[in-house]
Image 1 (tube, helix red, strand yellow):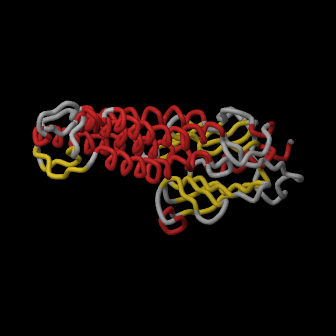
Image 2 (image 1 turned 60 degrees about the vertical axis):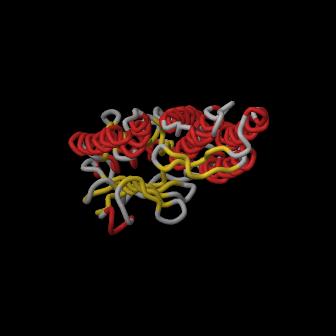
Image 3 (image 1 turned 45 degrees about the vertical axis):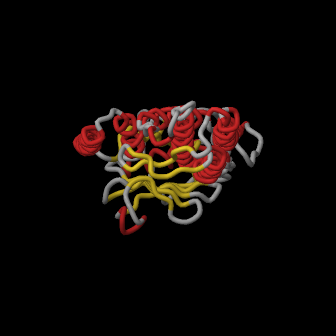
Length: 327
């Protein structure tokens, strides 16, 4: 499959994705341990009670460094690690694993950098009331966590079971000549993307003005990239199979050997799938529903179904059935 990053058919059956275990489990645990270690190493240079919360520029909540460190370590593991650990589940939907890993890693990065900034900012202070809120750490931590999440997501592999079909699609299903790969952009148009980008940028700029700081811009980057990546997709159908990409990475990747049949259906994204975009309705029933109208409904030998709304649904369906019949 031209869109796939690997041929998973040659892989052994796995329960956990090694890259997902590293970035989704090990990294959050190490990040949590880093904060605890810093608190103990710096304990002699820190006040007995450090500032942990600010009202405006004035600290209004205090606790011991070790208590704060252990509390944030638990939050990092349970919240950030809880999200990113989904990336380790080898048989879960690949796009879901990648999205959850990016979200979880962003949370881990944000809390870890903020925690270290709070501790380092209060080393050798004469009075804790003079401690300043490290607002810059919010932006830096978000960027660091998101970058780690993207790296981890790009290394995840699709270990789902690939079952070859044992018979061609039924003769009653439509056929079409294959004249070359079908490549199509799906989802929101350029105008919608620009409008969303402008709205998010305006919100970030306003926050920068109110806070008199640059950190909202750093948070703006991942906050804008994540929703934008789920608004636009690329569909490719060729002799090797069918694939859908999101954010430059494979969301779905099926070889032509797995296709048992394809047909055209009329789809209402909200009525049929409860929403717009990449949807899951029941076990193994997926959809890229980005418009109301015709859709290619494709079934696979492992029991999964994929619905893709497209103005070229008839062509996609015909080509898939033709290619599947040739195998």
